Amino acid sequence: MDHRIKLLIVAFESYGWASQGPADIPGDWWFTDIILLVSVWRPVGTKIYITLLNDPAYTNRKVVWAVSVSALLPTSRDTKFIVQLTLNELKTTDLDAFVKSINKTVLEQMGIDAGN
Image (cartoon, rainbow, N blue to C red; front, top):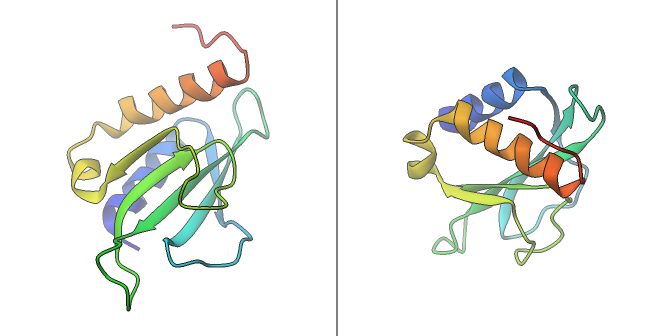
């Protein structure tokens, strides 16, 4: 796994998420893996998914070019993601601020006051 993705998972784990490993979903051409994260902070048990998106330019092999975060298990490449970043963008992103933003968005989607 790419070190930038590992750093992203560590950041999520620092802000209330536990990695459960790969989601139980059959593979498809548009992703390499989907990682399930479960909240250990409020609301406990909430799930989000980090999808490792494949570069569509490579049709004969899977090359991760971006990651996306979603509140629902992605079932197609047209899934509405909370956010999507290329690996190059991920490299220059403040991961703490990024995860805090995701946490706030997840709470807001659930109708819970995220506070400040």
